[in-house]
Length: 322
Image 1 (cartoon, one colour):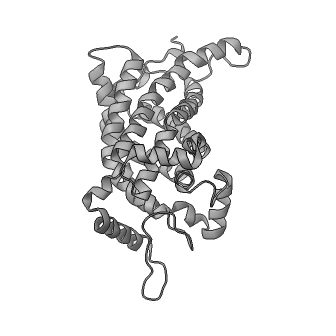
Image 2: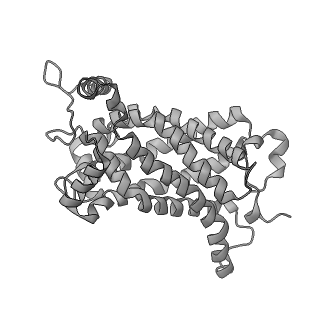
Image 3: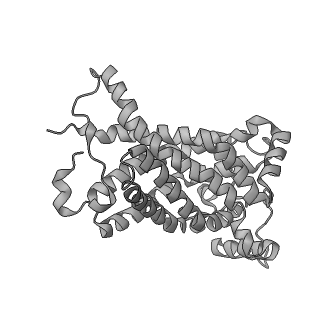
C-alpha cells in the first residue's frame, strides 16, 4: 500500500472544474469571515503613528470591540467580499501555471514558485481597487481621523449605512485622485504579494514533504505510521505563512501607508517610516498578520486539499490516498 506521506499532488487535469469552483467560493467566503477582524487590526496598526491609538494587536481588538462592538471589526467587509473574484482567479492561475511549467520542469519547488508569483500578479490586479476602498472604510472610527477620507453623516448628523459609506468613499477617491486613485499602491502591492505568494508555496511543500519527514523520524514513537498526511499539511501551512509574513511584512507596511495616506513614492514612504519609527516600524502589524494568517492558512491548506480531493474526476477518486 502506498505511503500516505508520499501522496501524489492533485493537478489541474485531475479536477472536475464545476465542483472545484462551487466548493472554492464557499471555502473562500468562510476564510474571509474568520480572519477579517485581524486584517482590519493589522491595517490600523500599520497606519497609526507610533502607538498613538493602539499598543498592539490585543489592545486594538479590545478597544474596537468596546467602542464599536462586533460590527466595528467588520468595517469594509462587504466591499472586501468582492475579492472572492480575485480568489478564484488566483487558484485558476496557480493551477494552470503549474501545468504549463511542468512541461519545462518537474521540480515541485520551481512549479510552486513560478505559479505562486503568477497567481498573485493576476489576483492583485483585481484586488487592489477593492483593497483601496475597503481600507479607507476600515479607517472610519468615531471621533478619530486616521485616513485621508472621512465618511460624512446625513442631514440629521447620523452615520450613513454601509453602502452609503462605500459610495461616499468612492466619490472622494474619484474627486481627489481620479480613476488612478483606485490603483494607488499597485506597485507596492505587487512587491508585497508576489514574493509572499511565491515564497509561501515552496515553503509549504518544504515543511510538509521534507521538514516533517525529519520530525516524524525523530518522533516516530509519538506519531502513528498511518497518521493522515493532511495533519502534516495543516501544520506546514501556518509555518509557511509565518515565514512569508516575516519576509514580506516591511513592504506590506509601506503598501498600506501608500494606499491609505495617499503617498506617491515607495522610497519616500520608506524613508519617512525609518525616520519616524526606525527599523522596528517595518515590523508593525506583524503579530496581527501572523495571527490572521495562522487560521487562514490552516483552513486554506485543509480546505484547499480537501476541495481538490472532493473535486476529483469520479474515475480518479480511488487513485488518490489521503
